[in-house]
Length: 306
Image (tube, rainbow, N blue to C red; front, side, top):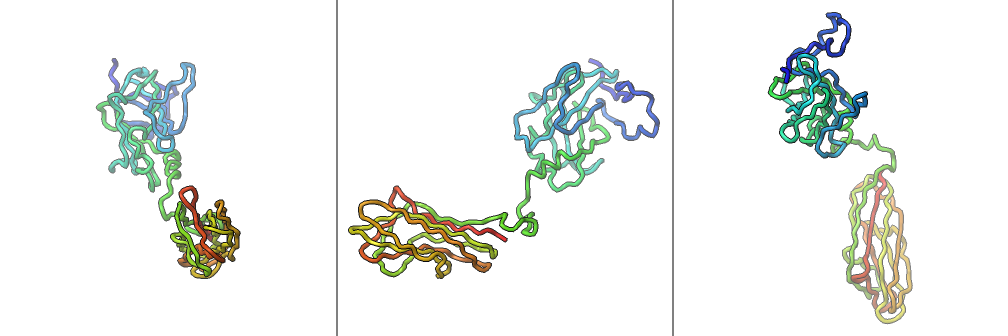
Protein backbone atom coordinates (compact mmCIF):
# COMPACT_ATOMS: atom_id res chain seq x y z
CA UNK A 1 0.00 0.00 0.00
CA UNK A 2 1.27 3.42 -0.86
CA UNK A 3 2.03 5.81 1.95
CA UNK A 4 -0.86 8.21 2.59
CA UNK A 5 0.99 11.55 2.54
CA UNK A 6 -0.39 15.03 1.99
CA UNK A 7 -1.44 15.44 -1.64
CA UNK A 8 -1.33 18.13 -4.26
CA UNK A 9 -4.95 19.30 -4.41
CA UNK A 10 -4.60 20.58 -7.99
CA UNK A 11 -3.08 17.37 -9.34
CA UNK A 12 -5.80 15.12 -7.97
CA UNK A 13 -8.63 17.19 -9.44
CA UNK A 14 -6.73 17.87 -12.68
CA UNK A 15 -7.27 21.61 -12.29
CA UNK A 16 -4.99 24.27 -13.84
CA UNK A 17 -2.46 26.08 -11.72
CA UNK A 18 -4.25 27.92 -8.91
CA UNK A 19 -3.44 31.52 -7.96
CA UNK A 20 -1.57 31.89 -4.70
CA UNK A 21 -4.49 33.85 -3.25
CA UNK A 22 -6.64 30.72 -3.48
CA UNK A 23 -4.35 28.46 -1.51
CA UNK A 24 -5.14 29.76 1.96
CA UNK A 25 -8.30 27.67 2.30
CA UNK A 26 -6.79 24.40 1.12
CA UNK A 27 -5.96 21.62 3.67
CA UNK A 28 -2.49 22.12 5.07
CA UNK A 29 -1.95 19.16 7.41
CA UNK A 30 -2.82 15.51 7.84
CA UNK A 31 -1.79 12.46 5.91
CA UNK A 32 -5.03 12.05 3.93
CA UNK A 33 -6.70 14.63 1.71
CA UNK A 34 -10.47 15.05 1.67
CA UNK A 35 -11.18 16.21 -1.88
CA UNK A 36 -14.97 16.30 -1.70
CA UNK A 37 -16.94 17.21 1.39
CA UNK A 38 -20.71 17.22 1.23
CA UNK A 39 -22.62 17.64 4.47
CA UNK A 40 -26.11 16.71 3.27
CA UNK A 41 -28.09 13.69 2.15
CA UNK A 42 -26.10 13.33 -1.11
CA UNK A 43 -25.46 10.14 -3.06
CA UNK A 44 -22.74 9.59 -5.65
CA UNK A 45 -24.06 8.16 -8.92
CA UNK A 46 -21.11 8.57 -11.32
CA UNK A 47 -19.86 6.13 -13.93
CA UNK A 48 -18.43 3.79 -11.30
CA UNK A 49 -21.87 3.38 -9.73
CA UNK A 50 -23.26 4.43 -6.36
CA UNK A 51 -21.35 3.82 -3.17
CA UNK A 52 -23.26 2.73 -0.05
CA UNK A 53 -23.96 4.74 3.06
CA UNK A 54 -21.93 3.29 5.93
CA UNK A 55 -23.85 3.45 9.18
CA UNK A 56 -25.39 1.38 11.94
CA UNK A 57 -29.14 1.80 12.23
CA UNK A 58 -30.24 5.08 13.89
CA UNK A 59 -33.22 7.48 13.81
CA UNK A 60 -32.98 9.83 10.81
CA UNK A 61 -33.70 12.93 12.91
CA UNK A 62 -30.51 12.46 14.97
CA UNK A 63 -27.93 11.68 12.26
CA UNK A 64 -26.11 13.66 9.56
CA UNK A 65 -24.69 12.40 6.27
CA UNK A 66 -21.01 13.19 5.59
CA UNK A 67 -19.34 12.39 2.27
CA UNK A 68 -15.66 12.59 1.34
CA UNK A 69 -12.81 11.35 -0.84
CA UNK A 70 -9.52 9.76 0.26
CA UNK A 71 -6.34 9.31 -1.79
CA UNK A 72 -2.74 8.43 -1.11
CA UNK A 73 0.27 10.69 -1.68
CA UNK A 74 0.38 9.71 -5.34
CA UNK A 75 -3.19 10.81 -5.91
CA UNK A 76 -4.47 7.24 -6.13
CA UNK A 77 -7.96 6.73 -4.66
CA UNK A 78 -8.00 4.40 -1.67
CA UNK A 79 -10.04 1.22 -1.49
CA UNK A 80 -9.80 -0.16 2.04
CA UNK A 81 -11.23 0.10 5.51
CA UNK A 82 -9.85 2.92 7.69
CA UNK A 83 -10.35 4.06 11.27
CA UNK A 84 -11.79 7.56 11.50
CA UNK A 85 -12.66 9.91 14.34
CA UNK A 86 -15.05 12.82 13.93
CA UNK A 87 -15.31 15.73 16.34
CA UNK A 88 -17.68 18.70 16.28
CA UNK A 89 -16.46 22.04 17.70
CA UNK A 90 -17.94 25.50 18.05
CA UNK A 91 -14.63 27.15 17.08
CA UNK A 92 -12.52 26.81 13.90
CA UNK A 93 -9.29 26.08 15.83
CA UNK A 94 -8.46 24.89 19.33
CA UNK A 95 -11.16 24.41 21.93
CA UNK A 96 -12.72 21.23 23.26
CA UNK A 97 -15.03 19.13 21.08
CA UNK A 98 -18.76 19.33 21.73
CA UNK A 99 -19.20 15.80 20.40
CA UNK A 100 -16.94 12.92 19.32
CA UNK A 101 -17.62 9.75 17.36
CA UNK A 102 -15.06 7.00 16.62
CA UNK A 103 -15.43 4.64 13.68
CA UNK A 104 -13.11 1.70 14.27
CA UNK A 105 -13.09 -2.10 14.47
CA UNK A 106 -16.36 -3.46 13.14
CA UNK A 107 -17.45 0.11 12.43
CA UNK A 108 -14.38 1.18 10.43
CA UNK A 109 -15.14 3.31 7.39
CA UNK A 110 -15.18 1.46 4.08
CA UNK A 111 -13.59 3.47 1.29
CA UNK A 112 -14.28 2.43 -2.32
CA UNK A 113 -12.37 4.05 -5.19
CA UNK A 114 -11.59 6.91 -2.81
CA UNK A 115 -15.24 7.56 -1.92
CA UNK A 116 -16.90 7.10 1.46
CA UNK A 117 -20.07 8.22 3.19
CA UNK A 118 -20.84 7.95 6.89
CA UNK A 119 -23.90 8.82 8.95
CA UNK A 120 -22.58 10.87 11.84
CA UNK A 121 -24.53 10.27 15.03
CA UNK A 122 -25.30 6.64 14.29
CA UNK A 123 -22.71 5.42 16.84
CA UNK A 124 -22.80 8.26 19.37
CA UNK A 125 -26.46 9.29 19.25
CA UNK A 126 -26.00 12.49 21.28
CA UNK A 127 -25.13 14.63 18.23
CA UNK A 128 -28.37 16.64 18.12
CA UNK A 129 -28.37 17.52 21.82
CA UNK A 130 -24.62 18.23 21.84
CA UNK A 131 -24.81 20.93 19.16
CA UNK A 132 -27.98 22.53 20.49
CA UNK A 133 -27.64 26.27 21.11
CA UNK A 134 -24.39 26.75 19.12
CA UNK A 135 -24.48 29.21 16.22
CA UNK A 136 -21.27 28.01 14.49
CA UNK A 137 -20.12 24.42 14.14
CA UNK A 138 -16.90 22.94 12.74
CA UNK A 139 -16.05 19.31 11.97
CA UNK A 140 -12.61 17.94 12.82
CA UNK A 141 -11.49 14.67 11.18
CA UNK A 142 -8.76 12.20 12.07
CA UNK A 143 -7.81 9.19 9.91
CA UNK A 144 -6.05 6.19 11.46
CA UNK A 145 -3.24 7.47 13.72
CA UNK A 146 -2.80 10.82 11.98
CA UNK A 147 -3.32 14.16 13.69
CA UNK A 148 -6.57 16.03 13.16
CA UNK A 149 -6.72 17.54 9.69
CA UNK A 150 -6.63 21.28 9.12
CA UNK A 151 -8.59 23.34 8.48
CA UNK A 152 -11.73 22.09 10.15
CA UNK A 153 -14.82 21.97 7.97
CA UNK A 154 -17.50 24.51 8.83
CA UNK A 155 -20.88 22.81 8.91
CA UNK A 156 -23.91 24.31 7.22
CA UNK A 157 -27.64 24.03 7.87
CA UNK A 158 -27.99 20.26 8.44
CA UNK A 159 -27.00 20.13 12.13
CA UNK A 160 -29.14 23.20 12.79
CA UNK A 161 -32.16 21.48 11.25
CA UNK A 162 -31.52 18.68 13.74
CA UNK A 163 -31.81 21.26 16.52
CA UNK A 164 -35.15 22.33 15.09
CA UNK A 165 -36.52 18.88 15.89
CA UNK A 166 -36.27 19.60 19.61
CA UNK A 167 -37.86 22.55 21.38
CA UNK A 168 -36.67 23.28 24.94
CA UNK A 169 -39.35 23.46 27.60
CA UNK A 170 -40.62 26.98 28.19
CA UNK A 171 -39.03 28.39 25.01
CA UNK A 172 -42.33 29.24 23.26
CA UNK A 173 -44.32 32.16 24.67
CA UNK A 174 -48.06 32.75 24.42
CA UNK A 175 -47.40 35.73 22.12
CA UNK A 176 -46.01 33.33 19.50
CA UNK A 177 -49.09 31.10 19.53
CA UNK A 178 -52.36 31.85 17.75
CA UNK A 179 -55.46 32.29 19.86
CA UNK A 180 -57.15 28.95 20.48
CA UNK A 181 -54.20 26.99 19.06
CA UNK A 182 -53.25 25.39 22.37
CA UNK A 183 -55.41 23.60 24.89
CA UNK A 184 -54.98 22.09 28.31
CA UNK A 185 -57.24 19.53 29.91
CA UNK A 186 -57.86 17.49 33.01
CA UNK A 187 -59.91 14.32 33.14
CA UNK A 188 -61.05 11.63 35.53
CA UNK A 189 -62.36 8.32 34.31
CA UNK A 190 -62.94 4.76 35.43
CA UNK A 191 -65.43 2.31 36.81
CA UNK A 192 -67.02 2.96 40.16
CA UNK A 193 -69.85 1.80 42.39
CA UNK A 194 -71.96 4.60 43.83
CA UNK A 195 -75.61 5.26 44.59
CA UNK A 196 -77.76 8.09 45.93
CA UNK A 197 -81.21 8.47 47.44
CA UNK A 198 -80.80 12.21 47.96
CA UNK A 199 -83.49 14.48 46.58
CA UNK A 200 -81.01 17.40 46.82
CA UNK A 201 -77.91 17.66 44.66
CA UNK A 202 -74.83 15.92 46.08
CA UNK A 203 -71.39 15.31 44.57
CA UNK A 204 -70.86 12.19 42.50
CA UNK A 205 -67.94 10.58 44.40
CA UNK A 206 -64.43 11.05 42.95
CA UNK A 207 -65.61 12.85 39.83
CA UNK A 208 -63.98 16.28 39.99
CA UNK A 209 -61.11 17.95 38.14
CA UNK A 210 -59.10 21.12 38.81
CA UNK A 211 -57.75 23.46 36.11
CA UNK A 212 -55.57 26.54 36.41
CA UNK A 213 -56.98 28.57 33.55
CA UNK A 214 -55.66 31.58 31.62
CA UNK A 215 -59.05 33.13 30.90
CA UNK A 216 -59.96 31.01 27.90
CA UNK A 217 -63.20 29.13 27.32
CA UNK A 218 -63.55 25.76 29.04
CA UNK A 219 -65.45 22.84 27.53
CA UNK A 220 -66.79 20.43 30.19
CA UNK A 221 -68.18 17.00 29.41
CA UNK A 222 -69.61 14.18 31.50
CA UNK A 223 -70.91 10.75 30.57
CA UNK A 224 -71.96 7.83 32.77
CA UNK A 225 -74.24 4.83 32.97
CA UNK A 226 -76.97 4.46 35.61
CA UNK A 227 -80.04 2.46 36.51
CA UNK A 228 -82.85 2.56 39.04
CA UNK A 229 -82.82 0.27 42.04
CA UNK A 230 -86.42 -0.94 42.18
CA UNK A 231 -88.96 1.18 40.27
CA UNK A 232 -88.97 3.58 37.34
CA UNK A 233 -87.61 6.89 38.57
CA UNK A 234 -86.09 10.23 37.50
CA UNK A 235 -82.48 11.32 37.98
CA UNK A 236 -81.09 14.84 37.75
CA UNK A 237 -77.54 15.84 36.80
CA UNK A 238 -75.41 18.96 36.59
CA UNK A 239 -71.81 20.12 36.33
CA UNK A 240 -70.70 22.90 38.64
CA UNK A 241 -67.61 25.09 38.72
CA UNK A 242 -66.60 26.25 42.21
CA UNK A 243 -70.21 25.61 43.30
CA UNK A 244 -71.82 27.52 40.40
CA UNK A 245 -73.82 25.63 37.79
CA UNK A 246 -72.16 25.40 34.38
CA UNK A 247 -74.58 22.95 32.76
CA UNK A 248 -78.21 23.09 33.92
CA UNK A 249 -79.47 19.86 35.40
CA UNK A 250 -80.62 17.18 33.03
CA UNK A 251 -83.54 15.01 34.11
CA UNK A 252 -83.54 11.46 32.84
CA UNK A 253 -85.84 8.50 33.37
CA UNK A 254 -84.27 5.31 34.65
CA UNK A 255 -85.51 1.75 34.75
CA UNK A 256 -84.36 -1.00 37.12
CA UNK A 257 -84.09 -3.32 34.14
CA UNK A 258 -81.24 -1.74 32.15
CA UNK A 259 -78.34 0.68 32.27
CA UNK A 260 -78.97 4.07 30.67
CA UNK A 261 -76.28 6.54 29.59
CA UNK A 262 -76.39 10.17 30.68
CA UNK A 263 -74.34 12.81 28.85
CA UNK A 264 -73.79 16.47 29.75
CA UNK A 265 -71.82 19.02 27.68
CA UNK A 266 -71.33 22.69 28.51
CA UNK A 267 -69.07 25.68 27.83
CA UNK A 268 -67.76 27.88 30.64
CA UNK A 269 -65.70 31.08 30.61
CA UNK A 270 -64.16 31.41 34.06
CA UNK A 271 -61.73 34.15 35.10
CA UNK A 272 -58.05 33.23 35.05
CA UNK A 273 -57.08 31.16 38.07
CA UNK A 274 -57.64 27.76 39.64
CA UNK A 275 -61.10 26.24 39.30
CA UNK A 276 -62.69 22.93 40.29
CA UNK A 277 -65.39 21.24 38.22
CA UNK A 278 -67.63 18.59 39.78
CA UNK A 279 -70.52 16.38 38.77
CA UNK A 280 -73.59 16.42 41.02
CA UNK A 281 -76.72 14.25 41.01
CA UNK A 282 -80.05 13.68 42.78
CA UNK A 283 -83.25 11.64 42.43
CA UNK A 284 -86.97 12.21 42.79
CA UNK A 285 -87.47 8.96 44.74
CA UNK A 286 -85.91 5.61 45.57
CA UNK A 287 -82.24 4.97 44.81
CA UNK A 288 -80.16 5.54 41.68
CA UNK A 289 -77.02 3.47 41.07
CA UNK A 290 -74.03 4.66 39.04
CA UNK A 291 -71.91 2.35 36.93
CA UNK A 292 -70.42 -1.05 37.66
CA UNK A 293 -67.41 -2.97 36.31
CA UNK A 294 -68.71 -2.81 32.72
CA UNK A 295 -69.22 0.97 32.65
CA UNK A 296 -67.29 4.14 33.45
CA UNK A 297 -68.03 7.60 34.75
CA UNK A 298 -66.05 10.20 32.77
CA UNK A 299 -65.51 13.90 33.45
CA UNK A 300 -63.32 16.07 31.18
CA UNK A 301 -62.56 19.78 31.31
CA UNK A 302 -60.66 21.36 28.38
CA UNK A 303 -59.47 24.97 28.21
CA UNK A 304 -58.81 26.61 24.84
CA UNK A 305 -56.05 29.01 25.85
CA UNK A 306 -55.98 32.59 24.64
